Image (cartoon, rainbow, N blue to C red; front, side, top):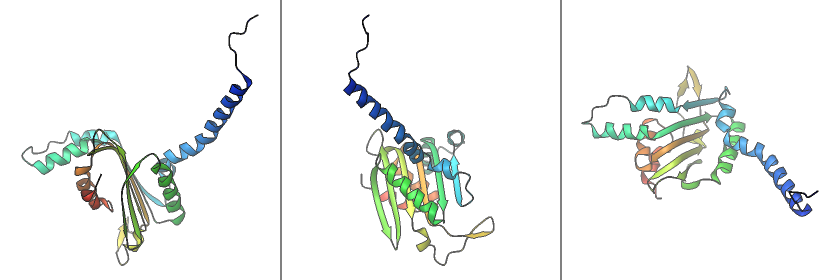
Length: 198
């Protein structure tokens, strides 16, 4: 009886090794892709996740067409498909977020880094349809507490200080407009995007 498939032992061994490596890498990949889900219910973080439906609703808002700034804002919001944010003051969570950003950065391009009085702000992007557009914008801010000395920030009546912020925006994002959005949302470091060099 003839065998229809002929697998050489060396090839079989290579295939088994490749499958094992892929299986071992799966937990690392899922952890790297899921930092927002990991901390979504954690009481030590402020978590925001704006879903695509919300952006669709915002896009339908009736805006005065004679106001060019309002039109630009609407177009910008309409191009975003998701926005996720984690803010924390806890050192352990900050370290975990920093490790996640480092692992994710390997698939992104670093757009800019700003260091100021112990704070570090990094912007990463995934290329879009042209040099002004990106599919993803990742903003990572660490060491915010250095900038907040003497400030009095309260959330739900409780005094808070912040150490780390990570923001992920996805969609067809125009970098020339996004600095306006981050400024309106008071996202730390967003004002530096207007000076970006790609």
